[in-house]
Length: 133
Image (cartoon, rainbow, N blue to C red; front, top):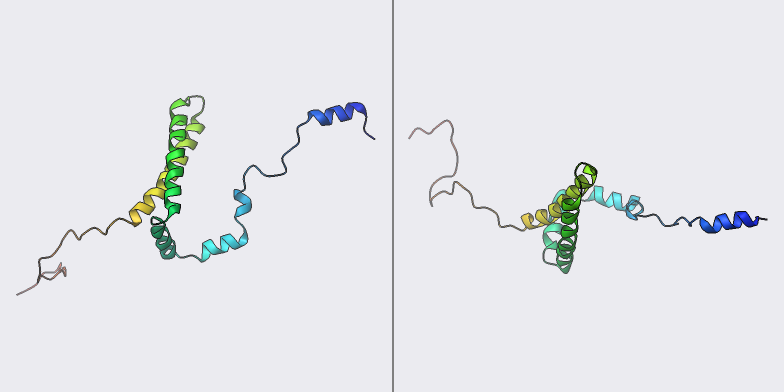
């Protein structure tokens, strides 16, 4: 049986959360990791390219537009002498958010025209050794 003092101490000590602070680690199960390994880069690019035509893309853009000002404010308000790690973290988070957005936009960009566009009827073959005519 617990004493009165022990009960008082237990009441004062906050309960620890039974749920982890982040679900990220528990999300990456063996099945998820196997799917990641099994997906080819080409399949990933096709799926990401198609994302731009979905409502999910708009949700990603909205998230980015909400998150970027918060990260920017953190960058501007942080003392670089006292908290350089905070600045580094915010820069990394901002770069990561922008990287996904940029990658998908780049996947959907039209193919650039060839710089050495040949005139009709001209050969596009390159002969570094030259041609004797």
